[in-house]
Length: 68
Image (cartoon, rainbow, N blue to C red; front, side):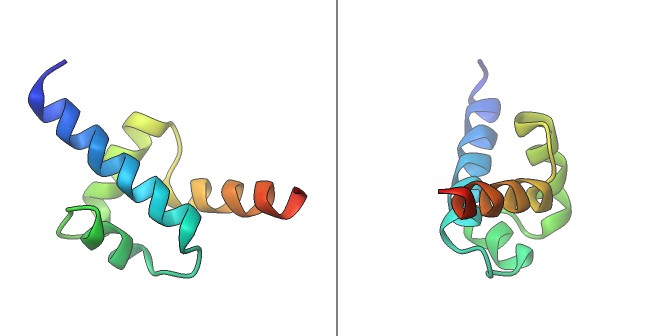
Protein backbone atom coordinates (compact mmCIF):
# COMPACT_ATOMS: atom_id res chain seq x y z
CA UNK A 1 0.00 0.00 0.00
CA UNK A 2 1.36 3.42 -0.93
CA UNK A 3 1.98 6.14 1.65
CA UNK A 4 -0.70 8.30 0.02
CA UNK A 5 -3.28 5.53 0.31
CA UNK A 6 -2.34 4.97 3.94
CA UNK A 7 -2.70 8.70 4.68
CA UNK A 8 -6.08 8.87 2.94
CA UNK A 9 -7.36 5.85 4.82
CA UNK A 10 -6.24 7.43 8.07
CA UNK A 11 -8.14 10.63 7.23
CA UNK A 12 -11.26 8.63 6.37
CA UNK A 13 -10.93 6.68 9.63
CA UNK A 14 -10.69 9.94 11.56
CA UNK A 15 -13.80 11.19 9.77
CA UNK A 16 -15.73 8.01 10.56
CA UNK A 17 -14.77 8.31 14.24
CA UNK A 18 -15.93 11.93 14.32
CA UNK A 19 -19.19 11.10 12.53
CA UNK A 20 -19.94 8.51 15.19
CA UNK A 21 -18.84 10.56 18.21
CA UNK A 22 -20.32 13.91 17.12
CA UNK A 23 -23.47 13.17 15.09
CA UNK A 24 -24.56 16.83 14.97
CA UNK A 25 -21.22 18.25 13.84
CA UNK A 26 -21.52 19.71 10.31
CA UNK A 27 -19.88 17.69 7.57
CA UNK A 28 -17.68 20.65 6.67
CA UNK A 29 -16.25 20.61 10.21
CA UNK A 30 -15.79 16.82 10.10
CA UNK A 31 -13.85 17.30 6.86
CA UNK A 32 -11.69 20.06 8.35
CA UNK A 33 -10.87 18.06 11.47
CA UNK A 34 -10.02 15.06 9.30
CA UNK A 35 -7.49 16.96 7.22
CA UNK A 36 -9.62 18.00 4.25
CA UNK A 37 -10.14 21.51 2.93
CA UNK A 38 -13.81 20.78 2.24
CA UNK A 39 -16.47 18.12 2.36
CA UNK A 40 -16.42 17.32 -1.38
CA UNK A 41 -13.13 15.45 -1.38
CA UNK A 42 -13.97 13.77 1.91
CA UNK A 43 -17.17 12.48 0.30
CA UNK A 44 -15.25 11.04 -2.66
CA UNK A 45 -12.62 9.33 -0.49
CA UNK A 46 -15.18 8.12 2.04
CA UNK A 47 -17.23 6.53 -0.74
CA UNK A 48 -14.10 4.89 -2.18
CA UNK A 49 -12.79 3.45 1.10
CA UNK A 50 -15.99 2.85 3.10
CA UNK A 51 -18.48 2.17 0.32
CA UNK A 52 -21.00 4.82 1.35
CA UNK A 53 -21.13 8.58 1.74
CA UNK A 54 -20.40 10.25 5.09
CA UNK A 55 -24.10 11.11 5.40
CA UNK A 56 -25.12 7.50 4.83
CA UNK A 57 -22.50 6.37 7.35
CA UNK A 58 -23.79 8.86 9.93
CA UNK A 59 -27.39 7.67 9.43
CA UNK A 60 -26.33 4.04 9.80
CA UNK A 61 -24.31 4.83 12.94
CA UNK A 62 -27.29 6.65 14.46
CA UNK A 63 -29.59 3.73 13.69
CA UNK A 64 -27.17 1.23 15.23
CA UNK A 65 -26.69 3.35 18.34
CA UNK A 66 -30.43 3.73 18.69
CA UNK A 67 -30.92 -0.03 18.46
CA UNK A 68 -28.66 -0.72 21.46
